[in-house]
Amino acid sequence: MKVKSLSRSSDVYLPARNTEVSRLPRNLDPELHPFERAREYSRALNATKLSRVFAQPFVGQLGHGHIDGVYCLAKNIKRINAIASGSGDGIIKYWDLTTREEAVSLKAHHGIVKGLAVTLDGNMLSCGMDNTVKLWDVNKASEPEGGLVKTFLGGSGFTGIDHHRTNSIFATSSNKVEVWDITRSKPTADLSWGADNVNSVKFNLSEQSILASTGSDRSIVIHDLRSNSPVQKLVTLMRTNTICWNPIEAFNFAAANEDHNVYMYDMRKLTRALNVYKDHVGAVMDVDFSPTGQELVTGSYDKTIRIFRVREGHSRDIYHTKRMQRVMCVRFSMDTRYIFSGSDEGNIRIWRTEASSRTGVKSARQRAKLEYDAALIERYKNMPEIRRISRHRHVPKPIKTATEIKKTEVASIKRKEDNMRKRSKKGSMPFQKEREKHVIGVAINPPQKE
Image 1 (cartoon, one colour):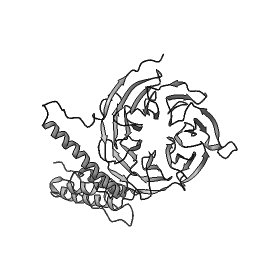
Image 2 (cartoon, rainbow, N blue to C red; image 1 turned 45 degrees about the vertical axis):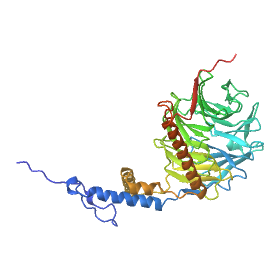
Image 3 (cartoon, one colour; image 1 turned 90 degrees about the vertical axis):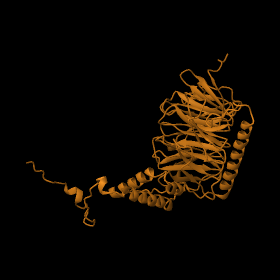
Image 4 (cartoon, one colour; image 1 turned 120 degrees about the vertical axis):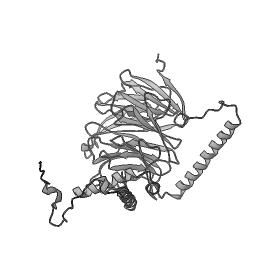
């Protein structure tokens, strides 16, 4: 006869502190808990309600902001407590996020600053409509020269700039796409393809020989630095303001469009979008991926910021304030906890990525409770009551009115198309796919320059 002695560790039932109550052993056998799902649903409902009660996304603003509108932001990929901003009066500032005060303020350009980038050694590159690109050493800003290291002259006003992740090269957009070496005063390559004016340019974050640009001819062009030539060109119904590459999925990028939507593309097949992110009622001015590649944030002309999950088509949250005007630029922090936005009235605001989250040291039991609540909400997120509470947001009256008008217009267009399809020959009016109807055409391998 075998005899098994029951034994358990004292860590399971003894309290960690004298102030805690002794923990009771619990048998997790499902047969002993017939109402477990009902209890879990009640806990998920309470957790959803509490997340909305404690939702306070706005953290604060940086210093006193700018005198003019903020039109570009740049983050340092090697530091989580620094960010750069550029405004319409030619001022660029380097901010210390721990104190929320400016560390460096420089009069960089005559006119609007259109682009900013942080180099590998922590310096700043700025470009403006005064036909110049300037390299700044932020550690020497107090010297008589103001920290100016070098000036690059261009043939026309610059509209965007981006720096390579590993090499000392950068790309600019103006009336053409040019690649520069920091050690030289002239561009090393011209990658333009057809557009009269190029709005923005971005390097791929993984395969860094690839960069993409957006043009005034409603095009998105993929360029290859290995051959110093453009590779593909996508033309859409309306203009794309800017793009952002996914830092994890190297082939995918998001494009902020004038038709109130953001489109996700795979560069290997540009004839259709991977996803369409809706809900804005104004032109989307900027888009940025989180460092994990799981979410993206958008800033729009309708004075709101929206956060999307990559696999979903509608926003999971919307941020707005009474004084915030048109949002021109947005960025995720490098630890994904915060969002920075620059708007037309000159303020740079800090938002929490999770509206109900709080900073500070948490005990192990508190962290376990938060993770348990998050798992319950995710499990029961499709239940009607939980879905209604988690999706409900108070929005400004102009946004609500514009949303209702847009829904009415879209429904009217669909109803008209259905009526025409019913009265037309069968097959003469095929249904247009939502992810393809904004694409006009894709061109590959442009003609070589003479």
